[in-house]
Amino acid sequence: MMQFTDWDILRNLLLAARWTILLSLFAFIGGGLVGLILTFLRSAKYASLNVFFKVYVEIFQGVPLLMQLFLTFFGLSLLGIDVDAWTAAILSLTLFSSAYLHEIWRSCIEALPKGQWEACRTLGLTYAQTMRHVIIPQAIKMAIAPTVGFSVQIVKGTALASIIGFVELTKAGTMLNNATFEPFKVFGLVALLYFIICFPLSVLARYLENKNHATR
Image 1 (cartoon, rainbow, N blue to C red):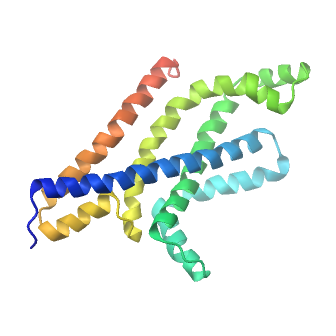
Image 2 (cartoon, one colour; image 1 turned 30 degrees about the horizontal axis):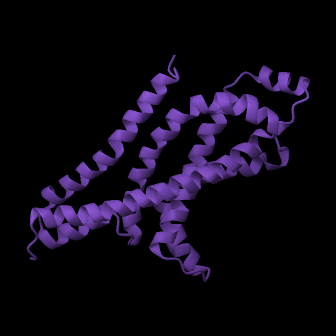
Image 3 (cartoon, rainbow, N blue to C red; image 1 turned 90 degrees about the vertical axis):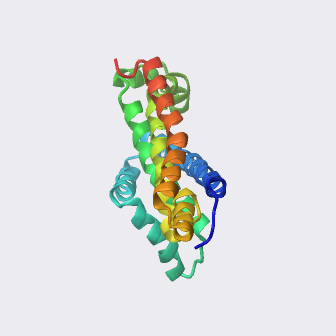
């Protein structure tokens, strides 16, 4: 058994936590961009794309993230496309996040009174003008709290990337446990670091929700 001091364990976990945070940021930004495109297209009422939107959301919300990681990492290899664990993790989490973020933002837009759309058409505003000046400013107030709240789910979802060999916080904890045989100490620190990352996001989401009166 290798000898690790408490500082050695904590230092290695902190180094791995950087990759957890980085992966979460990539997934959130990438998922946000894809989700935003889907939301704009769907709110534009392209009837021919409605089936695509529904199927897309159902697939990435209905299939467990773990299976999506397996299919991306191993499935693409069967098609002759070699991807490393980092790329597979980003791609899977991005698509997973985009489906949920799209649903959050679509729901916020559809929650606005439909009379506002009709009023904008009466005034001769284009779709882009309506979204920019009327719909988006109101939808943002409702969407910001659940969006920040969902970022917590993204952070926790990165733990599944350890299954395909990506060394983030959970994978580093497993490796350290195998080397030290001190599961309570190692995984206790892993849980603490996840809490330190996620708790501020949860507090921020509740603050934004109360500030924007989303619960009233």
